[in-house]
Image (cartoon, rainbow, N blue to C red):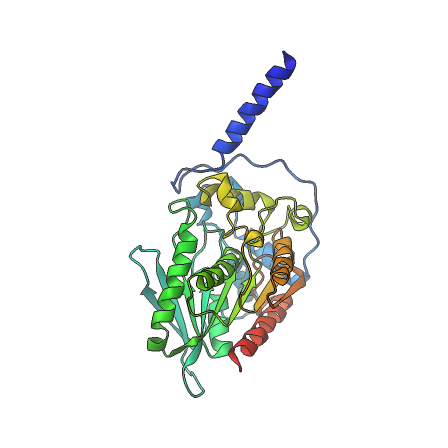
Length: 362
């Protein structure tokens, strides 16, 4: 009898877990139950990185994994922490005026628009190279405003048009809405790049975190649909592997500003079912990766997604792709774009620029 009772209990647990794999499509849907705590202690960030994390905490940030999506979207971001450090150092946080922006719709939904960055002093003969950029936020939080620094920096440094894509967010629009929007935006850029002064034959894809995933997934989409292929993919700490037992999921489980519990929180809101998280558009290491453009992967040492980048590099190499990856020490998730206050970010940004210059034939 005891074994039968345990069997029923196990069945009930299984059903309960399955039910928790999908949230209601409401921004006020309560968060899932927290996972069991992990005892791992992440590596110590470099002092300049720690200063950003401390500044973010001083702004009153709450653990995102304990919040509803609507409240999580109001939390101070790591970018806000970087700006706080810049203010203390007497550095301006105003957007670089050397780059102009224009918001343009690419779809009918209010969230389907892009911010087009263009250097005011565009130099050189002929049309400019183009970068289609996808921001991070786990497909639930953040927007093109949160992730302004990277596209603005790339536009200025590469004398390029950068198209920062906004897309529908979960849980209002669940997977694969974000991937569908990313693909739609890429088609739209191919059609309109020339009208903006861009070169449709020199388009790269780039993204951070969830956006790093979208950059690779969109390259796969372009290959499968026989669209003009991007000349390069820059994927910064991408979501790429759904295995929860990866080394970095363990050693950086309690890292900031991204931890393992937050990854579960994002999955709970963007998934329709638990099976979505194994879809090759999310679980990129299981996708058909053959024939993709040359790719650069940037990782942070102290990041639960570090192993995603490591395993994606291995999978791409196994598929015969040209891929180069670097892990930058002493920095955390979201460090990219903080080059004015974090040395590791400065190094990573210049590494990315060098790789893109080569891709564009500069």
